Image (tube, rainbow, N blue to C red; front, side, top):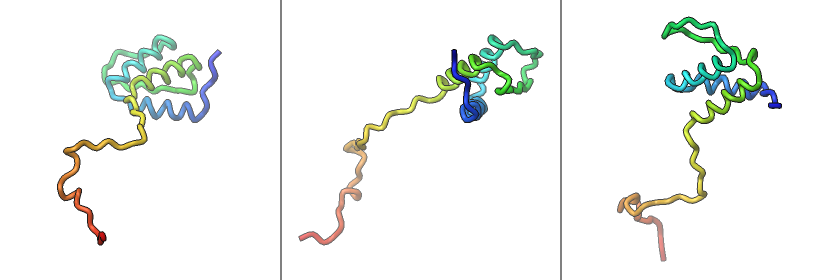
Length: 100
């Protein structure tokens, strides 16, 4: 059995859906229609209101997974900076100060 979403998870899911590119929103609608058929007329500019609180846990978890797959992959920080030879100009290599 799937764990119910917390209030914060629902809020994050709602925000993530609202921030999806328009071409990815069709996937959200498809998931909802497959799991919870909607009575929607075929108007291209029709606005669909999604009531997250009325959806079952399985649909919400599937939406969560889909939205996560639409997000750009985060690169792991290696903990070190890499600088190429061409990244430093001559003026950057001058060191100021009083040296013995």
